[in-house]
Length: 320
View 1 (tube, rainbow, N blue to C red):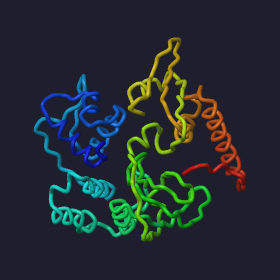
View 2: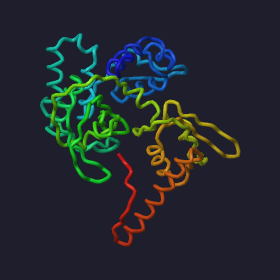
View 3: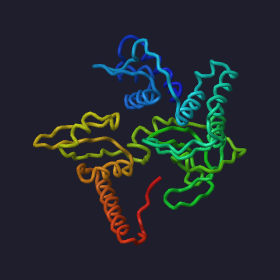
């Protein structure tokens, strides 16, 4: 199965023809799931590819030419694409020149500016990015100084870095943590120090497969189906928005609407539901209902304490 960078290149080439490509055809040609195809098409769209959707599938706008004004985060995306196997055909000299221009070009800041709008990543050190990219390519173990959002403390983590990726409006590192002995997700802007180690690892990891049964970032061991009941006023949003590649919307009659999706961790979708303030309600699984209630009650406590000017202790801080 090809990695995501080379897969995006192949996907772009497949969409450049005169006819529409269906999700099922693209999944077969790329040897991935239909869910992954939806994610990759969304990725190309975010990078500025002129994709149009027809009755059966997607294609590129015929004869379209796109001029891209790249943000810092978009420059990072292109740097990652250059690590794909197909890029090697350009020659090492061309690759080195492109990396140099993207990471050290005129007007490129030493630190990424704090993003605004939907992009939520804070400043990301170029030195850290380059070091991590190199370690991923060499399969080299490293240590990173990582700030936990739960405790606010920093400590060194020994990692086998697998992949850098952008999702839910922020940059992340997927890596095997030596302490936890499992693959974890780390926010790139919370890494403030990096050391490479004289240890190397064998990589057997596919990011797309790892993220297949997540809502956004969090991943668990067992997959379950989340079932949401939706108020009438939000039905159009859930019916038309591509919230998840395999999410299912249903009209049940009597003004009732339901949305269901397979997930392996309730945290992300629980926060998503809470944001609608009661207009979306979880029906299953029980763990999701419990977590939503806990988040909502904790938010109410924080609000009451902030109005009284007191400091809340014992707050639930279960976040990445």
